[in-house]
Image (cartoon, rainbow, N blue to C red; front, top):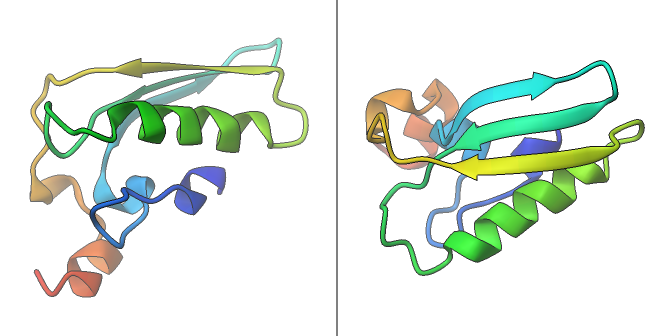
Amino acid sequence: MALRQVYDPEIPVNIYDLGLIYELKVDEGHNVYIQMTLTAPNCPMADYVVDAVRAAVEDVPGVVSAKIELVFEPVWDKSRMSEEALVELGLD
């Protein structure tokens, strides 16, 4: 999955396993809509992360475009992380 190739620059875990992706939809025209968050609303790397997500998704064969919506409700917390991410960060 392309989203597992994008890492939070401050945490050595990909954004998908961190639980930053809240919604992912693909329409009949192969346009992708992603609603995502960040681990903190004031993340200085927000633009970098959003651009990296867009680029990774648009590199998937067949995808026409990707629209990324950054949201902060619900607030992210570690309960959204995958088991793999929790183990990687020693939080299991």
